[in-house]
Every structure is written in C-alpha cells, then in structure tokens.
Length: 439
Ligand code: SAH
Ligand code: SF4
Ligand code: F3S
Image (spheres, rainbow, N blue to C red):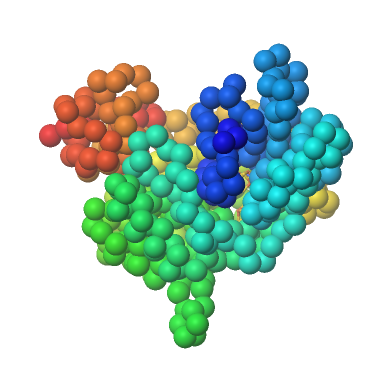
C-alpha cells in the first residue's frame, strides 16, 4: 500500500472533493495517512478565490521542495481550483509532479501510474457531466457526525470578480437518487447531519427519465424525509434565486436547519450591478424579510467584499447600513482581490488603494462583531437543541455543537458525546460562541 496525504484549502466543496479523491485512490492501492512524514504522495487541494489563498499554497509547495526530511521518491501534486487556473505554469515551476483539475479526479490513478522523474502529468479538462455521482466519498471528519454532500458542480453565474466559473466550469446537477442514497448511507452509519453543497443550490435542477423535474425544494424534502433524526443544511443560496418554495419547505420541516447563508457582497446597487450579481439592495432586503416572516428564528449569514472596483465612501456606507438593517448573525468578510481573466480584471481597474480596502474591511468587521455579539446576547436565557460535534477546542471536559441557526455552543459534557442531541440553555456568550449548560 502507498500512503496518501491530502492537504485541503478553500471551501467546503474542496473538503468534499478530497473525500472523493481518497475514495478513487483507495481502490488503486493508496491508503490515507494523517502523518505527512509517512506519505508517498502528497496532494494539495487548492483554492484560487483570492490572491492570498494562492500565495499561501505557493509557499507550501516551496516548503515541500526544500523539506529536509523529504522522503525519497515523494510525489507532490496540485489538485483543485489552482490546478485548473494555472495549468502548465505549475509544472514549469518544477516543484510539482501532478496537476489535476476538479473534473479530472478519475484520471488520478493513471496520472500516478505514468508519472516519472522529468515526466510530470497533467489533466485539467473540464466536463459538462462529471458529478462523481457513483463515488462513495471516504469520510475524513473525525467524529462521524456531519457529512458534506455535493449536489452539483460548477457555476453558471458570471459575478465579475469571481474566478470560480473558470476553475470549476459549467454548472451541472447530480442525480437526486444518488444524493438521497448517499445521505441515507451516512445516516445508517451514525451521521446525524448532512450539508448539501453547491455554488448556487437554488439553481439545482434534474430532469428524470420520466420527464419529471426535481428542483432544490423537492430535493430538500427527499433528504429531510430520510429521518427526523437527520439534520439537513445547505450552502450556498443565491439572493437572486432563493425561492419562496425553498423558504416554505424549510419552515415546514423541523429537521431542515434554520440557517441560510446568503452572500450579499455589497449594499450598494451600483456595486451590485458592476459585480453582476443580478439583484438590488431592495430585492435582497425583501428576501431577508420573506425568510424572517416564515422563520423568525432563522440564522442569516453573509459574505461581503470591501473595496471592489471604483467603490466610493458612499458605496461603502451603504454596505455598513445594509449590515445594520439586516443584522446578520455572522459574516465572512474580504478585501477585493483581482483575479486574472475575470470580467472585472478585464473591464475595471482595481483602483481602490490597499490601505482604503483594509480600512473599509476593518469597519465592516468591527460592525459585524457588534452585531454578532448582540445576536448572541439575545439568545442568553433561551434553550436550543444542539447536535454534539465533539470535544470543544479548549477543554476535553466541554463539548461543542451547533444550534439549528448554526451558532457554535460550548457546554460541559455531562457524559454526552458526538452525535447526541442535547438541549442546551445559554448562560453567556462572546461574539463568536454561545456558552451554556445541558438541561
Ligand atoms: N458561490 C458562492 C460563493 C463563492 S466564493 C456565492 O455565490 O456567494 C466565496 C466568497 O468569496 C464570495 O461570496 C465572495 O464574497 C468572496 N470572493 C469571491 N471572489 C472574490 C474576489 N475576487 N475577491 C474577494 N473576495 C472574493
Ligand atoms: Fe462566484 Fe458568483 Fe458563482 Fe458564487 S455565484 S461561485 S460568487 S460566480
Ligand atoms: Fe472553493 Fe476556492 Fe475553488 S472557494 S470553488 S476552492 S476557488
């Protein structure tokens, strides 16, 4: 058996893909190792979404090259979004033996067979069909509680700042029967939560042999029907596409978690237009109102970009005011990073100075920290059903797990363990965590 080590960067999609790769290579004599020193093959599953993500990976590849305890014959491969974006350039650098894009993982056994000193291997073909539907991912999470299930791949939107459509190709949905079968399989093996993954889950669509169509709401219902003991989550929702039917399906099923990640990107219509998000501030706020009228307790989180091309102080102020208006429970916040080849890179100068981007980002973060703290404070005294994910980071005497709204809770273990459902009464909080006790 050869030993395979995979290091995963980027989004949940990549975590799911790493599990697909382990599964593909397990059938070919590669065994997973968690000890990098033991590895015969190291694959780095990479992200291109921002320049700093790529710089980190270049640094890592350089580290492998100069690694003193480097095992004789060690192979290093780059897979994922950066492999797709940089293609041959990665081979020319001479530090990698294998380059495989997100739709090329079935060819990894062949690439590994054919690779030789001075003969690196590459496959970065994108596909219109590949969904790895028949592959049973080899789960890598420690506790066996929560599984990612990819329901679609690629993206057909053309948000002008975004590299994902170039690295992951065209959008395609996966056969719903295989999705439900995978969810049922992990549930029967003790998992209690699945997260359905796609860049834009609301555009999930499958036409069956009988002509009947399955959309995202229908898929959600089928997965939720597996068992009331199985929690269902999903990401990412697109504000332009999230439908009333999806919202009402969530409201009707207690085991679909009340949390929606709804990236807004900016509060300014001028920026949203330039970003090609295809919704307005008003539309976004209406969607939030619709979600809250159906589910007053629904957690809403977001992504935002500070300092996109030509962003003024007025545009930035609109983002801050939108944050105040919505009162997000949490947010991922970024400085704009120009990505080569995207529409924005071709059409708009990246003209907001770095120090201005950083200052604006700092203002958004400071505001969101206040909002997160207020949102958490409002939960003190309430009791939530929490799925135990495992020991807390700080202490083995404490457990952690999430509320339905996706807030992290920490509480004394009292004999419980990962996979248990417990009712936790919240006694205090920080801006990032709820602290409580099992009742
Ligand atoms: N499909 C998802 C998210 C994909 S990338 C969606 O549509 O929202 C995750 C987040 O990274 C995005 O929501 C965006 O906020 C951020 N992002 C994407 N490209 C970026 C760029 N060029 N610079 C800075 N942040 C970016
Ligand atoms: Fe990128 Fe937009 Fe697609 Fe999300 S929806 S992956 S931001 S192009
Ligand atoms: Fe995900 Fe990064 Fe690719 S966010 S889709 S791994 S560019």
